[in-house]
Image 1 (cartoon, one colour):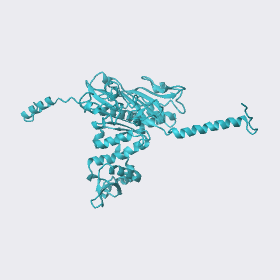
Image 2: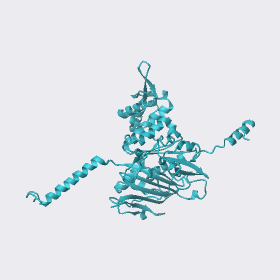
Image 3: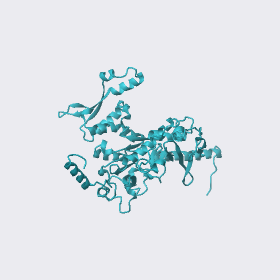
Length: 474
């Protein structure tokens, strides 16, 4: 085969540049077509030890380790095709079994990392709440660990603390090697080390690393608030501050949403589609003269202006009369369930739009069971949940514990064993519990544990004696 010589106008350098340009264009095209380049933030797992009723180490995980083709839409792959992360998970269990304690542990942990830089020297660490049914554990530290993803990068953060000081602290990340991911250190505060003894990994660079902290302050919190600290730790710190949201406690923390007419319309459309009788949400601006008169005279003008702006926005709900006329109802004229949903929806939309992690204790207490199912299905639907948002909730709603709606690894149980909370996923049960098994039926029958041990005979006997004694203790 004969090769033609290149024309004189093509130099070797020009040829190399043409080839490189071609591959760059091809690479860009492939990325645009097949790869979502948006920054992804997700929670992978959370471990806690010696916190309230959690005596021994317990781990909750969003990992999808098995049966990845089952409900594949509820699995996201934020950092690699090998790491499947679930979009939602629910925790079941008897009252006082520790469901809420798992979520409280997560919230206290996040609060401490977000705010410990504000502690003064010698302040107590309020988030230290050890297991109280053991004298030994009241002297031991609480331990927290979390694996998470920020901008497609996996991190692991661990901390041990007691009432007065941080005992140890470490932040790692997974660097991408030639053939595998390698866990590498960013910083480590070894047991009982001072801030001067903190060590740093080779990847932790780009700013000031040696930042003084008091014994009761997390280095991550202090460095994350320092503008001259490396950008990577400030980015990780923002995950703790902004990316995990707790509802319904934080549902009312976004008062400004009512000034966004598109969002108001979206809330109204949602309410109209779930048979509340509401056709539209209307926000009117009205002056409450009595409220204005009772404002403190020395209230700063800036604060007064914000308060007045918020209080002047009044919620109305439009219903259609029999003849088709629009009739406005005040918020107090709507049911408690509708009011709770109305105040929760902006937060829900925000989480789905921004790709946040939503933690919701007792989902059914704020939402009708059917609406709860709808909310969970929104997170599990990749067409709706395009930004990789996550939902972790506790509930007693057995309709959600259904193999036609949730995977085994999306369902968790809490149970008290000798006074201490244990947390287990349905995925950890033996092979008799299959992905298609009737989860709710078996749970209700007590085959999976997690049910309250109700001594009905003893309760009836106690009340009989109480009645016989005229309402006095027997």
